[in-house]
Length: 402
Image (tube, rainbow, N blue to C red; front, side, top):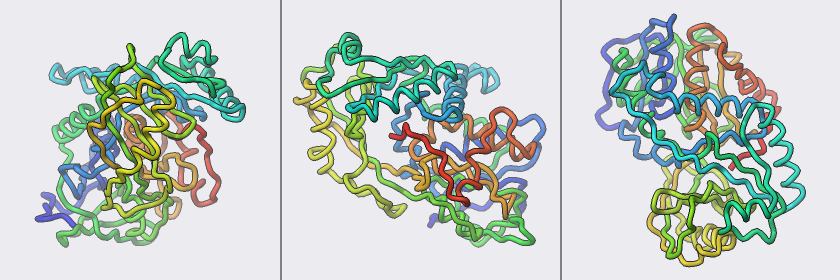
């Protein structure tokens, strides 16, 4: 519950966005700059410090190495948006260029089954114009001699528009510019959603204030299911813990380490003068939205053994920092859920990114703003990510989930 919740300056808004972190602020910014939308926008954020948000715990990476064309197209727009950030933000000279490190992703396969999946994904990526390359163990060793590759049969790598980007700065400027365009941000919490005749008509805040709403957008991250339940709806999104470890190496590799996805599921990469690794718990499952308990045993039992096996010089490392964040995990297919509910058309979901929210946020903000302004997607058709597949339990399979 929010301490000393704020109330907005008026009691009715055309759009109420529940959640003001990366996704909610992307929607707010894109909608405020939409050429035909001139309505009033309210963003309700329960924690304006964002201390416990998924946004604050992200590793801020982007890639095009997905297995579905739609996810590739979503990421390609993100890469273009990041490259041309100042231009997209109206050319304001105060807007900085975004820091980007194109060390790329390296998927490693240790079986023919995984190798076949990489080949299938490569064909889709190549068809979209991505610069992915399939690499034999000898080719990987020539480019990155620090890997131990005895068990590896194939790699998939791309250094064009893949790597780390400064998403925190993008997030900050989305909020600044949205406010300049009249978007109202408040520290409060939506605790009830009132519907009538198949439409949302208002939301109730923790302060007790009732706000009339023309459209409600659920951008509540790991709390998405709780917000949906307020409107009598269901969505298979839950908080799943994901662990990050920052470490130093006594004898580091002589070049940048790509974001390496080991067959064990552990991933690691260069992070400035240090290195960063991440993994899921040994027994993966949902936790409470407020549970950020760190499992320190994962470093010794899962992360470090995999890292040291793959990069032998990482046998001698020093753990510098660690934290746990939450994926807004879509149990059905780990893909985003975007669009209106068929039984409540002015309640729009933009949820369930399962770890991909930062890199998908530009396309999501643009797409949801188009839904509100035009009643349809115009730039990129994201209807396959809609609620219909959730209701029918027909997963949209994405094989390249980390």
